[in-house]
Amino acid sequence: MNDLLIEILFGSFFALMLLGAPITVALGVSSLFAMLYLGDNPIKMVQMAWSSVGSFPLMALPAFILAGALMEAAGLSRRLINVAESLAGPFTGGLSAATVMACLFFGAISGSGPATTAAVGMLMIPAMVRQGYGPGYAASVTAAAGGLGIIIPPSIPMVIYGISAMGLQAPPEAVEAHGVFQSVSISKLFIAGFFPGVVMAGGLLVMNYVRCRMRGFHGSSEPLSLHKVACACYQGFWALLAPVVILGGIYSGFFTPTEAAIVAIFYTLFVGGVIYRELDLGEMIKSLDTTTWLAGRVLLVLFTATIFGRILVENNVPGVIAGGILSLTDNLYIIWAMVIGLLLIVGMFMETLAAIMILVPVMLPVAYMMGIDPIHFGIVMICTLSVGFQTPPLGENLFIASGISGVSIERISLRAIPFAIASVTAIFIIASFPEIALWLPRMMGY
Image (cartoon, rainbow, N blue to C red; front, side, top):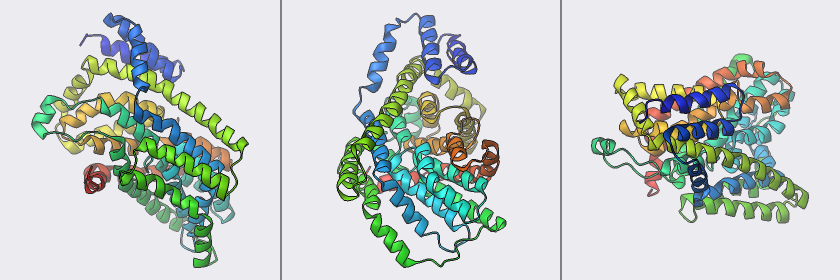
């Protein structure tokens, strides 16, 4: 490795970020500087960029974005939220707990944290305020729970992690020390994310109960009505069936995640156009417009992040970083604490997808050297980065919740701190007990 490569690559990247350059420009320009320093032909950047999008699994990205946009336009998301709201009842913090569950449901069809926060928050934040919850608390619990959207499969960050990790082989010394590691696939990640998502939601529900009990936020004056729950489930039957169709097909091996995304699109078109009859041509055009904008934004980051990561790998920068970390300690729990701490900081300042594409080539070799399963590592990484949605200064969920509730971002951020602590505690539990993520894929033959 050239002596000044790390300084040139990371120095120019952080300098451009400090100047306010978009993440795509910072990644691309710093990669160009590094290639010129190494004496490589810049045309290589074009070849790398082309290869980064020439993969079948990547087709799942725009397809899942479109499926989520169509489901919101077709009324499926609203019916899922109504089911969750019907379960609130007279319990302490029942409506805010229903908000967490609604984010869990909606995450199973959207794969996006901000989309989950927006869809659930538009209905649940006003409902919580009407029932006596403070608007700041209502916004904070919604912003925190919105992060579940990228943990519960199908998840767009899981698709990006899978694509980033597929091309990275375990170092020979890691294989010699720990044996052969399992391969990475998006299907495995989707299956592995189910129980960690439940653990993360459980942490939020416990914290919600404690805080609502302290603040005196009681449930509805009306008792829990089985009739009301049954009516909500009946009206939302086809919406409730959507996650079953998508995840059931993936988990059973009937179709791949990419094929599942296409199935989700046609399922939504049928339900929204024929059964609910809420999906018209205008809403479909809006959904396509949203998909084009989001997918294009992600692909531009993917182009430049792939080049950035390839330069790191080709020059053994991850190996140097792994060696430096392992020279400090070989205690697995301390290394997990360092990794989670770094990801929490990165998540505060960097977009989730860009962080995954930049950090996977750097941090996955460290995981291999410690004998950490790549699927387990990916789930912990995504869970940790999900906390960044509710922490300033980047916190996208905070901006969305602030816009809906009219409460300042500063107030929401302070009220979201206990939920962030609950999420981090859940992350350490998931990191300490790998079977939470790995048991289900193993049971299903992956």
